Length: 115
Image (cartoon, rainbow, N blue to C red; front, side):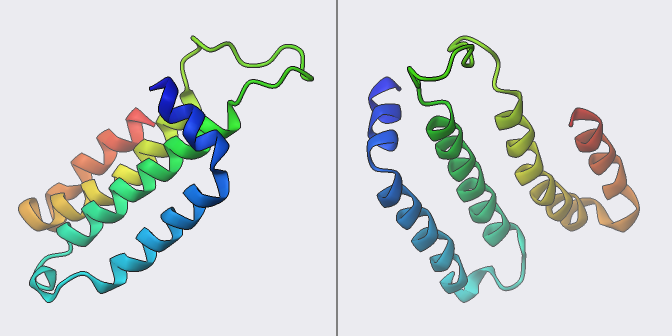
């Protein structure tokens, strides 16, 4: 994991370009997903979580000039909230597809309570 963090921090522009390319390619997903929004939403969610992880890695880069920086062992609450936010739309689409309009709200309530 440390090697990945070091690579992301050294190649910030390249990572951002790859993320933008991947997000752009989601518009070209095959038509076989047209009967359901779950596939494209899952891809978008995964890309959103990867982007959030990369941003967290970049933002938490050790900096010798700043005192009182974030401890390396502290729990990454902002990262978790961002991941839950990305998963929330996927939960809504899946609940809508499998449980309908009335029962999807239970899943959304649980997701909101988790946040």
